[in-house]
Length: 133
Image (cartoon, rainbow, N blue to C red):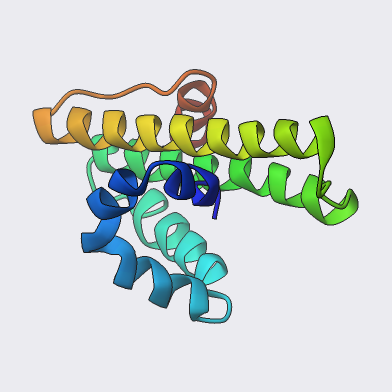
């Protein structure tokens, strides 16, 4: 949802995302998918003491990142996004900014996990540490 303006400006980015677009489409078209996925990660991974702390920490970072992404959507539901002018440009830039940084955090987290290193997303990692202990 956040990257729609970037995909329109840079069609190459959409082509790079093409392999996962069917999964994203299914996820967004399923009612309560985000709610179910959040609780599956939280209850199935984060609270599962049989899993290593490394896996539980990364699951908690993912859950917290999901919570952080709720905040811009809440603002959108309270304030109607502008259709024209500098407000529309600010909205487009903010949506693009959110997508770029979340994508960077996800790539960083996945790469760190594949390397066996604990990737620490600023601010979110501290909250994840507090929840895991």
